[in-house]
Length: 192
Image (tube, rainbow, N blue to C red; front, side, top):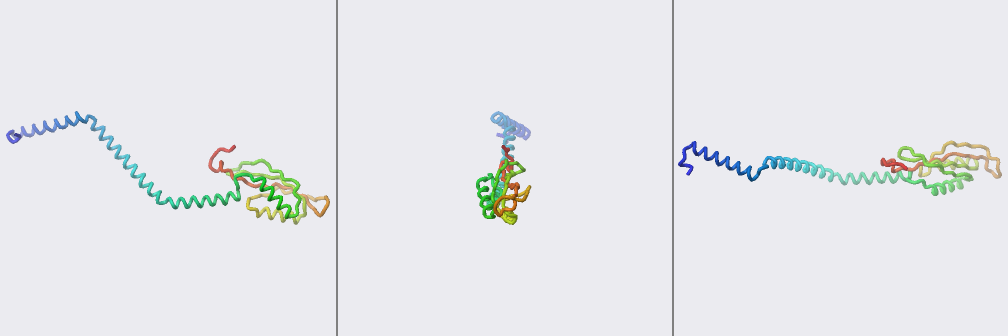
């Protein structure tokens, strides 16, 4: 039937059909431009997710390395907590110091723990001590304290002559300060 129409008629009919198809498309799909925008947005989301998948796979490949690093850090933390425990361990420390003073032939007269003093990621735990003994025995005691597994600083050492009974010749008083790890301060938590 189109062959019977002149050339310009065929063009008009084709244009009318094209316009009709476009009209039908807009009638049945009135928001086609909105759909194109949604498709573009979904395409962008897909690209972002693919990028995250690639990044996740790269991290997954490094997971054993990260796990090894975490294990190493936990071992180091365990070692540090031996030196810098998370609680004061007053009873254990008192027993150890009493044992060391007995082994060093010192008489422990005073053992007075003070309050915790926050400093950065740790707290200072001062202990006022008085001992009676001989000069050499005090040196042995202080040497043993220096080799203890925990850090103990001895300061404000005051010595004087002891005039009491027996072979004891000096009276010494000092502050033995040990340290306690404050995990709340180290992790950025609030201190109480």
